[in-house]
Length: 116
Ligand SMILES: [Zn+2]
View 1 (cartoon, rainbow, N blue to C red):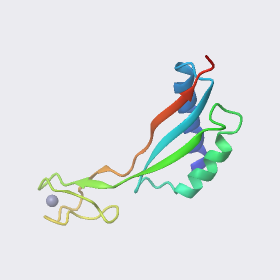
View 2: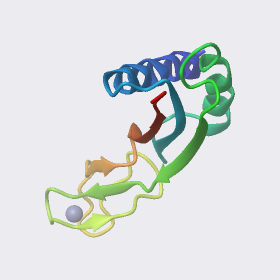
View 3: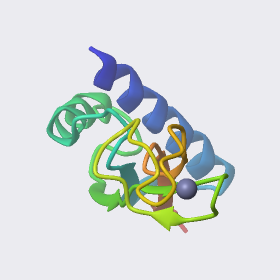
View 4: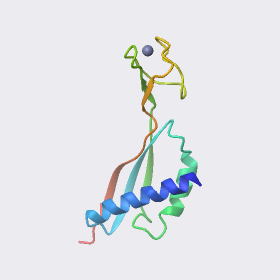
């Protein structure tokens, strides 16, 4: 259950952040998920439902935003959207262009509620 451990670490991170800001609960969390992160969104959504139980995030709306993959070729400087992982640069054929976006799994924003 790869996704469950990811979900638990997201809950951990958000909880720490929320508590540091004096939150009594978290109302909304926005998660950015790269196209090539290797995480299956449906599986993560399911895992999150389990992971938030009895936490500050229990009633939070979890939103998922996908992050387009983007590669940059160090040889010719081309920026492009790769069709898949490990494909050569479409311009100069460099076999290892660098994936600069698309592998991310990040908490983009958190909305909290405080009791006061
Ligand atoms: Zn290139």
